[in-house]
Length: 106
Image 1 (spheres, rainbow, N blue to C red):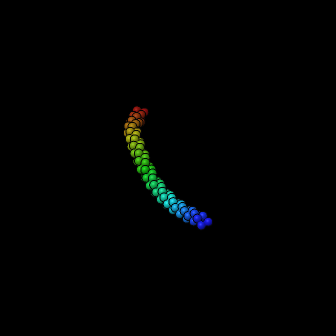
Image 2 (cartoon, helix red, strand yellow):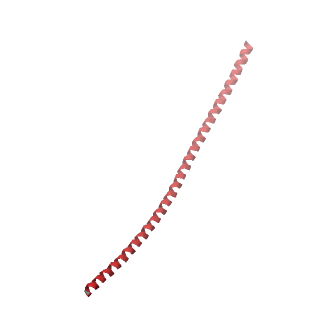
Image 3 (cartoon, rainbow, N blue to C red):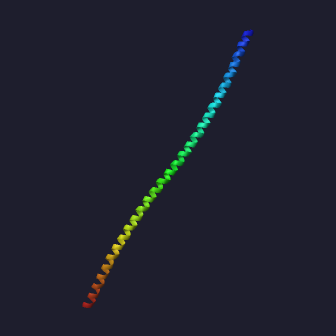
């Protein structure tokens, strides 16, 4: 029985050692997972910030292009207004001359 007892004690000792190793492996795995999670969160934050920056740049480029279009349209309308005004002034002078001739002749 003595040898059975020592075999059982050796088995029990080995079980305890294996449990310690399992716990160490679990602890190491948990630490690795936590570190990986932190790194993933940092990566996500970085990409979010970069995405936000790119979105802002894209928005600013579009706004700049829109403002240039608006300025071009305004300039076109001003030119049209000047042209219409000149034509109106010519027509008014012709109309005044026509009225004066009608008054003199009639």
